[in-house]
Amino acid sequence: MEKKRTITRRDFLRGTVYTAFTASFGSPLGKEAGAEEKVKVVLIRDENVIDQQGNIYQKIVRQMLDRAICELLGEEKPIQAWRRLIKLNDIVGIKSNFWFYLPTPLELEAAIQQRILDVGVPKKNIGIDDREVLNNPVFRSSTALINVRPLRTHFWSGIGGCIKNYIMFVSTPWLYHPDACSSLASIWNKPLVKGKTRLNILSLIRTQFWGRGPHYFDRRFVSDYRGLLIGKDPVALDAIGARLLQLQRIAYFGEDRPTDTTPKHIFVADEKYKLGVSDLRRIEVVKLGWTEGSLI
Amino acid sequence: MKNEVIISIFMVFGLLAVGGTPALSAEKDAEKMEMKRLLPLKVGSHESDRKDQFYDRKTTFRYMDGAAELYRSYGFKLLLVRRYLKTGHPPIIVELFDMGSPEDSFGVFSFETEGEDLGAGQGSDYGGGLLRFWKGKFFANIYAEQETPSTKQDVLEIGRAIANSIKHEGQKPKLIHYLPKEDFVERSVRYFHHHQGLNYQYFVSHENILRLGERTHAVFALYSLSETKIKTFLLLIQYPTQKLAKEAFQSFVKIYMPESTSSRVIQTENGRWTSAQFYQEYIIVVFDAPSKEKAEKLMEATKKKFEGRQ
Image: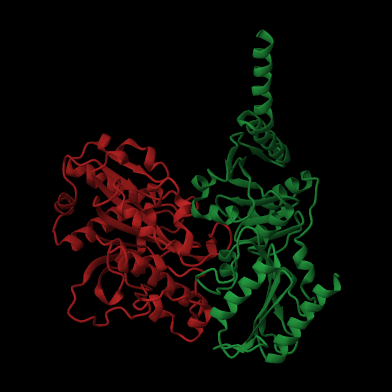
């Protein structure tokens, strides 16, 4: 049995930390990874999704979502794509994120809900929630979940992404915080959640790439990236998301300023819980729309 | 028989009053009232919306998600959230935390002092539209929902009013007094209990190799050494017993500086120097000194401070 290795600052200094548990994290995107199948994710950006007053433009969000999901599933029309994800008789929970400083944009929640309604799911069978999912009857009886949240850095887990967004499906979230939240992916095996997630969406309309302090939020370190990242694999989305935040920090600070917590849970989700793919070399990012400053 | 019943009833009520739920509830209600009194209903043109919310150690997660862990890593007891409204201006949010002790109030405050001290409470920090201050056992965050040109003035006005209504000041953690003053960057000092607190300031290891926890007290400070201006860090940890300090020291040396000799000074991969020693129930670690001599000098200066107290 392999002995568990303790990672210290000195591993970072000598550059060996990646071989310890983050082998793929620093790998450039697009580098060949052999014959293994790649996971597809779609990045779509639109310069006009945020207007000059800082408001998010509802119509453009809807267009971005439609175009991205068509690309992801190889369908021509959004409704065809959504029908492959959601059935008429599904009870659908849209697991959002209400964090005060940087919540999931209401415009994005509305766009998702509208497409599920378009499939023919009655409104009473659709719920949008975050912190009360355990008490929400739609979520308690759900047959399908859509996972949507903004991408940001996070003190305890390195990043707040798709994997972490399900932490409210447990009644004792704080028990998942030790060891950089490495066991977060285990939540995805809980009966209330397991096998139900049809789509994951990371809102990159605004991203928080760096932050200090108790609330881990600082407007100076929020970027209007104006994008959405969507896919079926939450680990792949988070791996790309973590890489994007890293590149945004480099662009902003002129150096690779490490976060205080390595987003170890993404790799553990892959290696231990087999929830998805974290190796950037095995993720195909299809890019649509505005490309200026895309970084990835 | 009747007397026995009466006595039993009194005993039950007596027990509840001492340690049962109603007493605890009453205590909590009293704490809530105390905190409400600290927040004026009106400050200048800003008025409370009179929809105060309280959160304790268990429920605060619902309010602030994982950020609550920071407060829970200290002795946080109760949070009061109040919104102040003013026509034509974005609401201002006040979060007042009862941290249980001045030491832990200072500890939470010390987590981030990169902004400007605006002179509220016993220490304040303003940046990005957020004012933070500590006074006595209370710590406060004050910020506007949207930043406007008047945000700084508004949050400061409210912050100062609250700070003035907190009558009792408190002492910083005693451990701070053992930090040598030469080259010391005063606003850099951090106080915490858990290893996540250390890693937030200076990543040492993803595992708790210094065996920090609820019962340990740690301070971490920056030294900008005179000639070089190279950032050097000093970590002091106090353990409940000398035995625990020794065990933690052995764990740290074994994992972090396995090549060290009895001098416990090593050169790390960035060309800087790390030195570690334990003294009674304390551990002292110097990180990133520019030379072996500088590391040893800071270590000696710290030990002298400890010895000076005896």
